[in-house]
Length: 198
Image 1 (tube, one colour):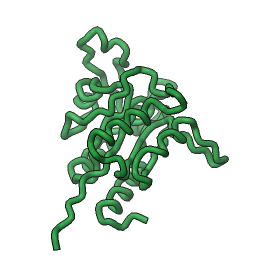
Image 2: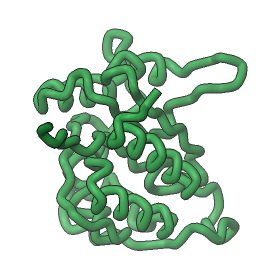
Image 3: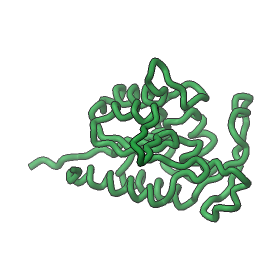
Image 4: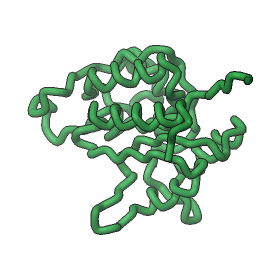
């Protein structure tokens, strides 16, 4: 019987409020977070922060997921290609450069004809890579899903993208991605890899 080769699950990663926390104060209040500085070399870089906050355990967890072939990290952020150039060395991500689902605007919450600009970018990336029906993981602070049943327009918009077996991770902007959420991504992608997703 031929061996089935499974490809990594596309992991669409937001930056601001997801990979990077956006603390309301100096960031010292949350001991998980480390600060870093970005090397801003080009005039266009002035739209990015010089100081960033991130959780090194989360970065280590993402590195393991990529290294083990469970996920293919793809930037789904208004940082577009600058994420590879500026963030990767600052936070210690490995295996870069990563693919980019190009947004083309610094206004990531923007809707175009009722569709979230990031949903359009993710859909284009999946189509270009022949993965329209593939399961995906998406991490973003705009994927609001309150217990009351309210879904943000962005969440409603992205739910139509992907193959139905999707994992959407909503982050709190001031905290960013947590290691428990990375464990959730691991569990989901391991089940996909083993063919035991239900």
